[in-house]
Image 1 (cartoon, rainbow, N blue to C red):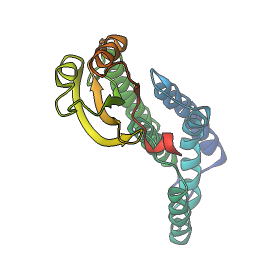
Image 2: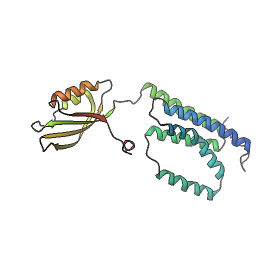
Image 3: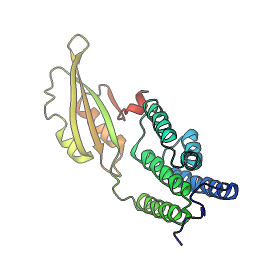
Image 4: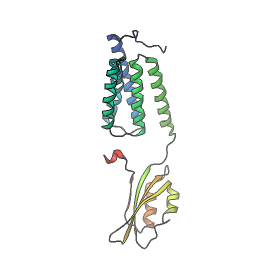
Length: 222
C-alpha cells in the first residue's frame, strides 16, 4: 500500500510523471481549501498552495541524485527565502504541508502523501471547528486623559472586567503637555461587547479620544 508507484530507480517514465503531477495538483487544491477554511487568505496564497506540490515534485524528479543540480536548487531556494514576506503560523504550516506532499509525490509515495494530507487537514478542520485554543482578539488601545488624572491604575478595574491581558506600552504628553496619551496592548475576553468597553473608558477619561484597533503586525506594516 505504501510502496512507490515509480518502478525504476534510474528515472521516471512519462506516464509516471503525468500521474504524479495530476495527483499533486489535486492534493494542492485540497491543501488550499483546508487553508481557506475559516481563515484569512489571499488569492495568490491559494494559487501558491495549489501549484507548490507539483513544483516541488518536478524539481526533485529533475535533480534525481545529481549533486550539482541539488546544490543549484538549494541556492535558488535561499534567494527566494530572503525575498519572501513573513506569514502567519497557519500559512507556514500549509506551505510545509505542500512541500512535504510534493516531496512524497516526487518519490512516488502516493499513499504516504494521502495519509499525511488527510491527517493534517482533519486535525486542522476539527481544531478550528471546535475553537480549540481560541482566545479573544488582540487589540491596541489608545486613550487620551487630562493631565490632572493619575494614569497609573486608572483603568485597572475596567481592564479586569473586559480583558484577559493588558499591558501599557507607551505614555506621552500631547497638546502642549495638557493631555496624556496612553497606549495599551490587550486581549479582549471572548463575547464581550466592545461598545460597553469603550463606554466605560470614556466615562473614566472625561469623554476624550479613545481609539481601539487591531495590533499591527509585520505584514500590516509592509
